Image 1 (cartoon, rainbow, N blue to C red):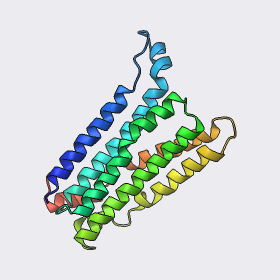
Image 2 (cartoon, rainbow, N blue to C red):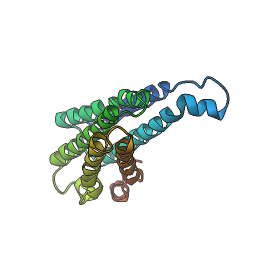
Image 3 (cartoon, rainbow, N blue to C red):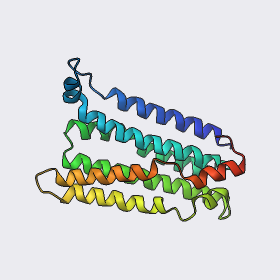
Image 4 (cartoon, rainbow, N blue to C red):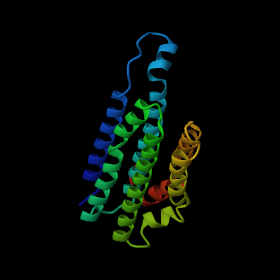
Length: 204
């Protein structure tokens, strides 16, 4: 099976996820910046972070499948596992916002990010297992330093949000900072994969 159907389905799911998240934003009650800040200020920040993460996964998913020769049953299920984790983003994002960044929702947000990261790694591993250790994808990811550091940073954010700061929001703030850091290190696509796609002659 070619990769085009899987990519089209995944693109559609990710588009729906983004649409659901933006529909969760509340309309300001007035017409001033203060009204916008008071009604949707934190919600906008939550939306931006989650949107960036969905964008990162879409970008890397697209590049990864440019280096995949075919789709097997295992790849289909691994891809569905990733989409399941990403489909939870609108719910977790809305919960985090509506509870004013309470400790438990922020922890669960980090768990969701960790789950998505693990699901992406599993998908990547299944593709490489099918294509072999000398596959273009395996050569392109190299040591995969960002992939190895991300779960550690997610765990640091989860633990800080859960155990640091007692009743105040210090631990929650530190936890969110860890989540933002992971987004920052992934926001630029991996140049090695870009190079591999060009060398393979796959369409952008």
